[in-house]
Amino acid sequence: MIGGPGSTKGGAWRRIDPALLWLLLLAAVIRLSIALLTVYHHPDEIWQYIEPAYGLVTGDWVRTWDIRLGIRSWLIPLAILPSVWLGHAIDPAGELHLLLPRLATGLASLGVVWSAWSFGARITRQHAIAAAFVAAVWVDIAYFGVRPSSGSLATLAILPSLALLVRFRDAGRGQDAVLAGFLLGLGCISRFPLGPALVIPFLWAARFDFRKSWPLLLGGAAGGVLVDVFANAIMGEWPLLWIYNNVFANVVANRSHAYGLEPATWYLQVLAWQWQFAFVLILPSLVFGAKRYPVLLATALAVIAVHSGIGHKEYRFILLGVMLLVLLAAIGSVDLLQWLARKGQNAVPKRRFALLLVLWLALSVHLGAVQPFAVNWTIGQAPLKALRTARLVPGVCGVATYRIRDVPFMSRAMFNRDVPALLLDGPISASLAQSRYNVAIAPIEHLGELPQAYRFAGCMSPRAPLFEQQYCVAVRPGPCTGSAGVFDYNRQLIAKDL
Image (cartoon, rainbow, N blue to C red; front, side, top):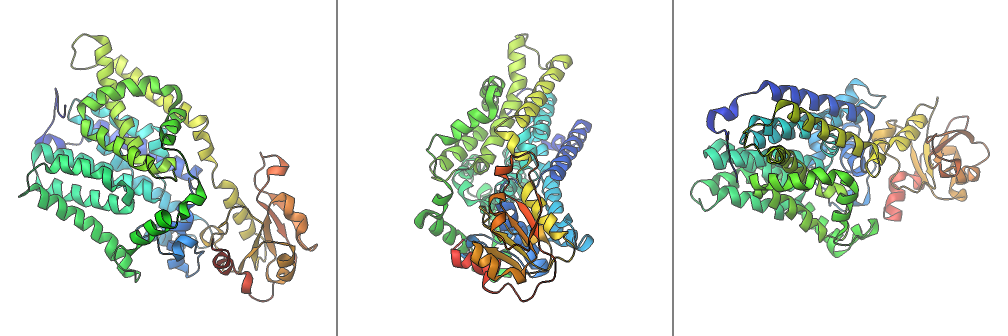
């Protein structure tokens, strides 16, 4: 069922309900808080997107193997370039250039709240409020809503496009079709493995109207893809060559296998672990929500199914599918409450509806506070603190990472100092290069291998046991002489194929 009692079309779509404004404000406050409290969810956010943008601003950046192989598009680095540039211009010695991309992404994620409202508004106002409220407060949606990465940004484009596709199917407005197609193309090119799943809503909206719908939707989608073509052309890259390079590296050469392989059922297992007893509300509500929007359920399941067939799996890869399932459950939860009441009412009593929203909020807070999600709140904090500590050492003239497990660890964007950066892998290299750096970052168990001139300055994970301290800083008094030379971080990454 696509419409229903209270279905809203035409001009009513364009009215701004005060409840929507309040929900957008709530979502903005939550995303601002998350942007301030977190660093990154996955290293890609820094090394694949912010780091290249920082390099365009300063001319110096760390280039990882996937950048060197050309398997990444320049679309996202260029998209966040203005926020990185502005942050560096305002605070050239600080970290504002790291924060502003998260804030900008969080602002863009408000479109998800509007999309949820749009889906619900076609049924009743309560459905709209429930869907938008869950989009504003649900931990997955809010947390990933500030992540400047391909999966998040693709989802932030695709969800509004799906709402516009529904509008186009309802009212047939050409503007909706063109904009929906554009956002769909933009989201697809941002994360191309989503393409097979996106065929479903495209065909659903276009139907067999080859004279009107298809040209409008395909024209809009082509415009979204052309944005990527232009972005890479500006950087001197051939159009869409990065997709070929990506597929060859990860499918033919199996580079992604080094980061882990999981069985086809892994995503279902993770969802069961992620949602825990929230399934008691989500599953029955999802049944009702799917009746309202079967096309969205089919899209969500296709996202999960396609990625289940790929060996290397990460939760963030199915973010679009997860968000759609949660939003469908939010819409369906109102229907479930009406069904449980069995009074044939068009609206849930206000007190019960308020309790439903409180339940959604309570579930979100609980799931965000326990494992497996709770670990996300501290990811990246210790590395950033280590590089911040190194950056603030008086007279820092060179920084070295010594036997750090995570490679790459050095980020010019996070370190934000124009001094040599070295990658050292043993006592001999640490001794040979000691005049070229006066700050070293190393695991606690390897600090003693540094030359005697280096003195312990502190470790960055105060709550972890001493033997688990992986980011500790040591400082040598005195100046530096010479350049990084063969120990230069980028030269070492090339030599080690990292």
